[in-house]
Length: 138
Image (cartoon, rainbow, N blue to C red; front, side, top):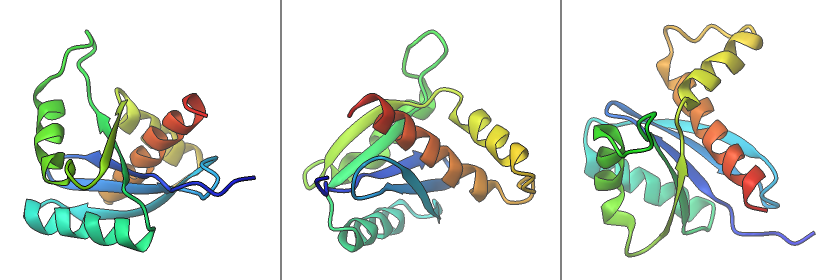
């Protein structure tokens, strides 16, 4: 099997960014970390370091569409946040409606305590977004 460029997935929120990365075959998603979004320039720099570490320029962002399919405030916030990386990276977009709820369900089914660690939900949500993309784009 051919090793492919990894994809770094971002679940961009107003307070935190969940990060996941694909494996080299693009079969699975692995949770990576949470980036605190207190300073967008610092957060962008952290993302650049992750891209360098994994030798990739592919970023998948989850876009939280409204249930009627329109782009709401948070989706526009995600697109604005990622703009500084558009010239140096390929930005892929994935509908992420209900990904946080799916992530919570996964954590509950594993018996994980996540209510005090919202970052855990964010990293698992990034995995959900990435895995959905991988499953539908092979």
